[in-house]
Amino acid sequence: MMAPMLVWGVIGVFALIGVTIALRAARMNQGTVGDYYLGGRAVGGVVAGLSYAATTYSAFMLIVLTGLTYRGGIGALGFELIYFAGLSLLVIFAPRFWLVAKRWGFVSPAEMVGARYGSRAVARVMAAVSLLFLLPYCTTQMAGIGLLLSGVTGGEISLFQAILVGAGLALFWAVVAGLRSVAWTDAALSVVMVASGVLAVSFAVAALGGWGQFMATATLEQGEWLDVPGPGLWSFGTFIALAFPWFFFALSNPQVSQRLFILRDFAAMRRMILWVLGFGLLFTLIAVIWGFAALQLAPGLENTSMATPALLTSGVIPVWVGLLLILGILSAAISTLDSIALTVGAMVARDFVRDEREASDARQILAGRLVMVLVVLFASYFALQQAAIVQQLAALSAAGLLVCVPAIVAAFFWRGGTAAGALASMLGGGGLAIWLAMVEGVSVFNPLLPFSVAGASVSLFVAVSLLSRPRESALDFKGEIAEALARHRAF
Amino acid sequence: MRWWLVCMMALVFAGIAVPYGLLGGTEPGLSIAFFWLGFGVAVAAMIALAVLRWRDVS
Image 1: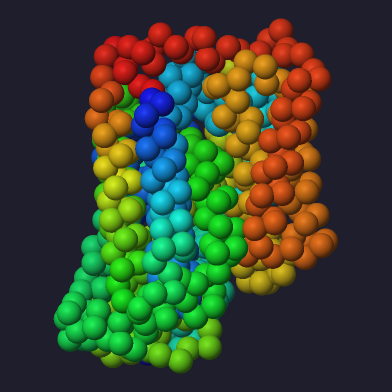
Image 2: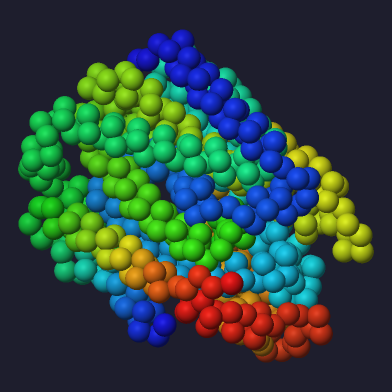
């Protein structure tokens, strides 16, 4: 076990550095909505890339993915890499998101989709769907922080204390200077995530006799874990059920798609994507190798989510590396949490509070800040309560957010798509997802769930669009940005 | 764009079909791990190839 005072000490230093970065970011704020939520649309590629990566790769990686590797083996690598392949959607959609956001001044992805179909109701429903499925996802980040800190200190740091730390830091970093403080702290946190992960894996593998011995032991003693379906978890159905909705993460999750609005120019966009690719591949390998190392160094765990705390307290990882990795996981959780809080705040401010007839920047920023406080309080409260309904919704988040994808794709590629089609697609698909998972009890490991939701959402979108007419106020994204896409040589 | 899309779709399909259809259930070894590692590198290369052709014009 780790001494609680030591853990508190490094968290204190970590918090101090983060607070300093956030306060420096706050000095640059200009008080406008575009500046607060998007950093003035002038963020460079490296900061944007690291921020995107830190937002995407959450506490899920070194807690859940490591646990899935421990329990089910190499299938976890395949699942995460199919998700990684979903970044290819950025090649098609990143230039389009950026161009239309710049052209019409969009701040939230829901606002963009609503404007495309000429309907604020579309924007509001998309924002509501995002809220419904992202808030429970935030609780899992909080729970991850609690699991980790109480796990490595043998319960000396309580769940309440751990959640208080996570909530305080996420809230401060998001509220104080909006996107600028979130992006800057995210970039710093991402460095901690990767550096701590590389160090921890290196020490774990060295303790197992080096790479050759590590792989030889895995082959000889855990041969089943190197196969699919492996020891049972990664059946083909489970693999598809998990990988399919996660493939669309870059489009369906507004906290990452909104990052496409913040970029300075095309060169920054290209650099951002290249940094995300490098970070993503490396961090995926770290999480999976860490899981295999835990299998060898801390075998026989009942609760596989405890693989990381068990490995950290096994005695083979130097205390300072363990402390650094704790900060890395804390960073992963907080960077995801504050980004979601900021995006949800932006969606409420733009899609619910904004009055199109008058400038109301101060009101929109205040509303967003209040929403951020509510989001973090919600996540903290339900993480403490460990409410079953919230855990079910969190597990459902990837499949649930899929219902936004047809309206987003069609916004750029099908002029026939209508507001009525978008509303039917999101409401019908979202309703089906909740009914299947929470009433019928269909597991997220069952491919019936994501494929039914996606099928219903696409069918409703196409059918209702064909039966209705595009609104007069609908925007023509496809026509308006065609020339710019060609000029930039984007697909 | 069309060729890039076709190649990307084929790559993703291979990322699922090869481990589950060809490599799974054979002798215990590192073949699936190395295949997926190569798959990840190939995905990164494909995406990099596409974004490196972008032109930064005002």
